Amino acid sequence: MIDESKALRGARLLVVDDRPENLDLVRQALESAGCDEVLVATTGERALRTALSQVPELILLDVLLPGMDGFETCRKLKQEEMTRAIPVIFLTALDEVEHLATGFAAGGADYITKPFRREEVLLRVELHLERVRLQRQLEENNRQLEEKNRQLEEEIGRRRQLNRRVSNYARQENERWGLSGFVGQSPSMKAVLEEIDLLSEAHAISVLITGESGTGKELVARAIHFGGPRSEGPFVPVNCSAIPRDLADALFFGHVKGAFTGADDDREGYFALAEGGTLFLDEIGDMPVDLQPKLLRTLEDSRYRPLGARQERTADVRVVAATAADPSPERLRRDLYFRLAQYSVALPPLRHRREDIPLLAGHFLRLLAGEMNREPPALDEAVLEVLMTYDFPGNVRELKNLVERALIKSRGAEIRREHLELGQPTEAASTAPVAPGVSSELPFDLERAAAWAEEEVLRRALAQSDDNVSAAARLLGTNRPRLYRILERLKDGTTDL
Image (cartoon, rainbow, N blue to C red; front, side, top):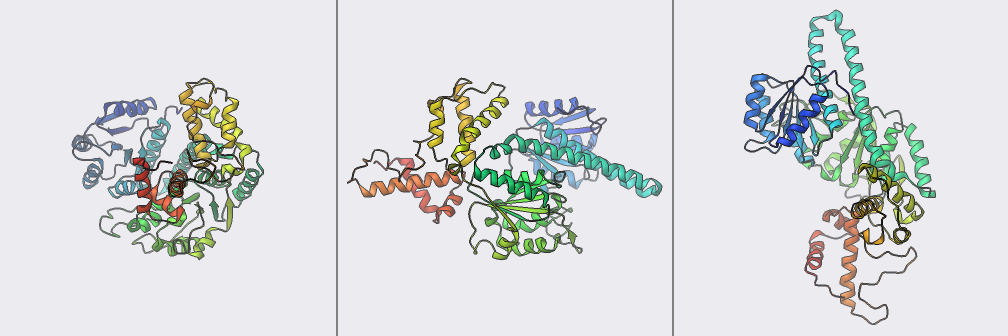
């Protein structure tokens, strides 16, 4: 819980959302933290009128508004002299890169994803209010040279304190979900933890993390970051498979005003945002090919040039990359691959450390029950037997989701076999599976068995790829149309074994 904030004391803020319940939620959070005046509006048109007449210090703006949406409202605010400098934080349920890029291009300073977390709203509002006031004080310092050094040091100290609080919040999120991935006493996980401990102190070396989907690659990256001297700096995760090719340069290196059509202001890229911290590049094999030589140069000499800028900038950033499979040379340059893999960490799939399954299940049970304000229920012995013989194609992520669903279905009572939503368990040392309804004694219909095998392999590939058909096609070395044909067959139920 965050106490009354000095940054919010005396502040006037504008909250724009077409849902009264969202307005009330954000307004109560701001007022409880000491905000003097919270203005509200339910449409973009009303927001413009209120901003021009009341001139708030910061605007929290919903994206999906009736009539004029949040992006267009922000563009109009930035066109007006009185409201141009007001920071706009978007409130959005749209967290895809293209939507975020649209928001920043419209003039937004930040975004908060729904559903809201009170702590995150207050921390981000505080951060941007401090930035606004810092700018005002720096302008005043230019007129009062004698006060400049003292005031600048004071504001730098405040900003560092806020950055530490934001990092602590991110660390709490990491502990909430991330440390669960490191529960276990298996030799393979002990080896991984030893490597994380070594890498935490080697704060400049690049790291490549490999492992199947769901094994916890981002959690390892966070542990490396938060366990070392960069922990007070930002941790910036980037999904390389979601980067639009035409925005890649601007997203990574930033741009200056006028660099291209629509570049109305200077914008920082991922390297600037990660300054002093860690840049995590997930799915590195999907990085746009045109960007790779520039990234390699930045890694080599720690310098980059924003689009349209005359001067290069230094980059004090540690880069940690991750991939589910060894990228092909056609998708990732070998020189970039080896530069990223100065040190490699290989995460074992859950089926290769089965002795950790009971510990992980118990950990997730305590964690999730606590979030539901329940006492953790017992696990029936039959449940543990099933879990120990299941292959978990989705790895630790699948186990967590399975425990969460079972906890909901059991309503807090003992978790039994009927609360588990999974297929038939597979013995750890079993031979190839037999299709449902097919006798283990030959002969049987070979074509129907082959169709079943295709469907079973597709199910597992989708589980490992978080139901992403494109990623599953890459994993299986085939194309999407073929997978869609198999999915249609599954949907129609035409395979009858």
